Image 1 (cartoon, protein in one colour):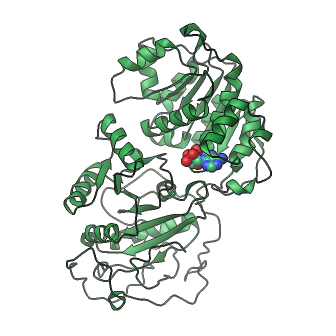
Image 2 (cartoon, rainbow, N blue to C red; image 1 turned 60 degrees about the horizontal axis):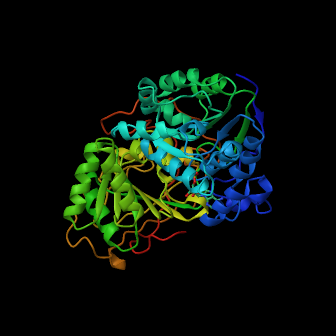
Image 3 (cartoon, rainbow, N blue to C red; image 1 turned 180 degrees about the horizontal axis):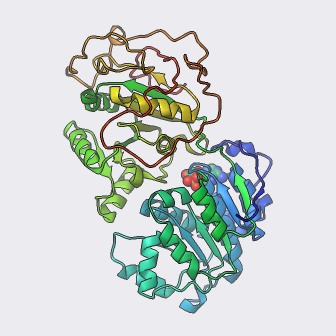
Length: 495
Ligand code: AMP
């Protein structure tokens, strides 16, 4: 691929807005209209990716951005792009004065809408027009809006191609292209669509590619779309925010629902996103929670776009206690100060754990990741611990014990009597004597019993197969000694 100039160090934390305290937005050369918008939003200083990327993009460079959600990457590309098209901004109502100058492609409708909201926020003191084109809704209003003229078009690839076919969009004036979450585009099979779109754009343009990971396929894509790119990386790949507390509750498969209800009714969890692997599971759990008197709603691919937007808006407005989501639907969701993410089921691809919990602990805020892990999921847990390079605290809740087969570390089966079904009431805090307790291991928590070192970099396992049957991968995989503390409810606070 074309030569990449590495600019930034790799370890500036994803949420370390404090990491560049001496730099202000004004130092980055942003226009007064944009500075005013930033001040309206209460942003006092740029995050590391913003401090690094904004001047480069303003100077016209192509960027390969290694940054996950939560780093402030949306503003890192949106602000300088707005700055570059600002000289062409016009207050004229004539559509001819508002050609598409910046195209931002996002893999999901939710992410596209969020980027669009950011564009609107940052451009509110300018005459620049923006719109969002995504599928699952009537195309006609979008065509009408495009005809009136927009400078910044945020779109999902499929719907953008629909607009190309209906001749409602022209790319002649596109100066800047952003491909956001390129790795997810790849996972979702959008790369052929993206490649088609790339071929329609003017060759003379600025291109920015953002991705949380850089596989060979992403590098190939970068090669086709970027010219002498500068690599701007602020978070090491698969690094999780330091502001997130992780906890596992070992629990039997059939005890999960009762435990979740108990957790939600404990009063500690103001709001949370609960992750499931399947759409059907999402709907079922949502109904069960609603029956238990919990304000829950589901967000997954089978819901209409309107229902998904409504569910998200209600959640953001604090009207929903628990939003039950699949990985795809939740990708890129940005909910201000979301305190908890709960994995009702562990993902089968460890990287998805990092994406899921990235919904909390954003922009330097504190967050909590809770995983309900049953016996068959221990293998996935081990993979996740390897990826995030840290052991996760295990806390058993009395009355919600795991199956007798629960083996952690794998191969270290302990004797237990079968867990009894949970008895009502679910919504009370357990008394001290109800809490089970295990002793912490005296070993170095970063070195597993078999010598596996959690402080070493993760080596990615081959991806692709996500089995349907609940089977743990790599049973003989290395692991760490369990760190267990007293079970706590009402004590789910931060470390
Ligand atoms: P992103 O990584 O773009 O999804 O942004 C993560 C969150 O950080 C969003 O809620 C942004 O509104 C917020 N954010 C972005 N830049 C800043 C900043 N400079 N200061 C404070 N919050 C920010």
